[in-house]
Length: 400
Image 1 (cartoon, rainbow, N blue to C red):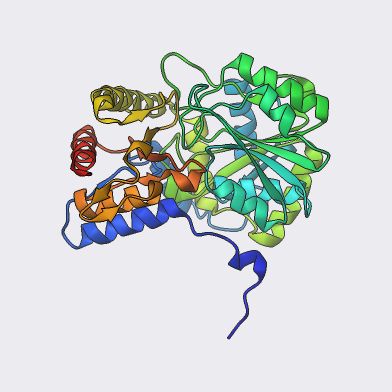
Image 2 (cartoon, one colour):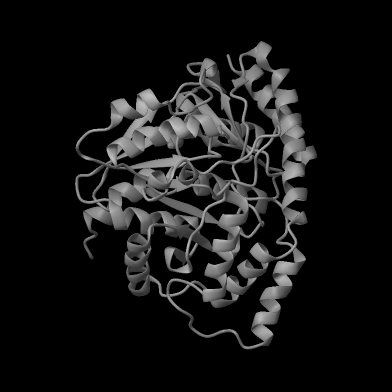
């Protein structure tokens, strides 16, 4: 038998993908499953982007390109960062990667040494700690509060920093909570980071999906000093409904980007060339589809909150999301109750019984660092969403 390394065998599988897989199995067996667990837009990739990929293939653009990315695409990323975020970068500071996860892995590989602490506000996207541990880092969770909208405060950040701290992973808009930090809140956090010379991995994958008139503010915008300490991670998956195309990117200080480019040249070489031409069209082309998708999510979000507001009398509650397409539904009042003779133990037990009895898939909060919740995505049709919420209510009322 081949012996696995501790490095690989210690990685936990993605619970979000596991729940989606179980849901797919039930659907394949003919059962009507409503899936709140999915983490991708339920829209097709816009036609202009698909057409750009077809054109690239027709023109024979199917060869290797530079490992760190197609030069034209890197320029387009620079133009996007200037246009949307007021940030000036050179193409040499951009690395095109195989999705946002790959960009995060690259950033952690470049900065985190064995034994380094990485501050991760909780609830967090479940991949963050796994990547940190893979490279020998130590996740240091800072628990945020419902009362503060699941947002990290400057005081919490200050208290968490030690001589071993090498990075803060910061995510706004946030998966799984939907939290969107204001400019003032981000500037206050940036002051702490600059004072300590703390590197920030800023995950901005959901930047286009903000609501209620809010706007995205990158922590790199806080000051020139903060920009030099920031590695921005973004991509085309969520904003352009291109999850399966697998393209992310990062923007970083030149020496960091150079090192990451060298690392990627040995790890994967370049991202799929055709995907890069599609992403080029996504960034340069008509942005109306982005606005349309955001408007659809905004409508669903309001409907989900309206329905859930009517469920508070039975013990269900939530924290109002301001971005992304998720709601953290608080369900811990039902723990200890029984369903078909089985006691509900934590968010995993709640989610598993909900799937078994009501054929509703949701993601247990425990995998995001908050066992009191389940995460609901509203990246599904309005009709399915309302029906699924009704099934959740029925499930909760059945618990004894």
